[in-house]
Length: 77
View 1 (cartoon, rainbow, N blue to C red):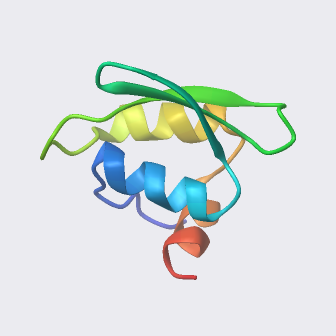
View 2 (cartoon, rainbow, N blue to C red; view 1 turned 180 degrees about the vertical axis):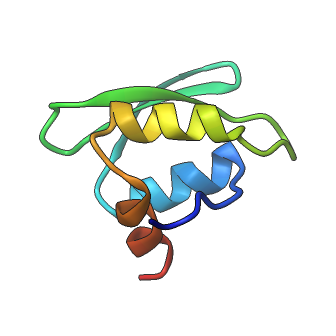
């Protein structure tokens, strides 16, 4: 089992965009991303300088049908 990395919302957004997720809309400091096939999407908070909590990061990954191994592969590719 891979440990969850410590990421800001902005860093997570950039990693997801590099791997085909689309930024659909933004309202204030929250962005909505969706997979390229349109099957799953979620909202990511983008707070300047603040890291995402572990529970929130797990919830975002769940909403996007990803697990910690998938995120680890995305971060290191």
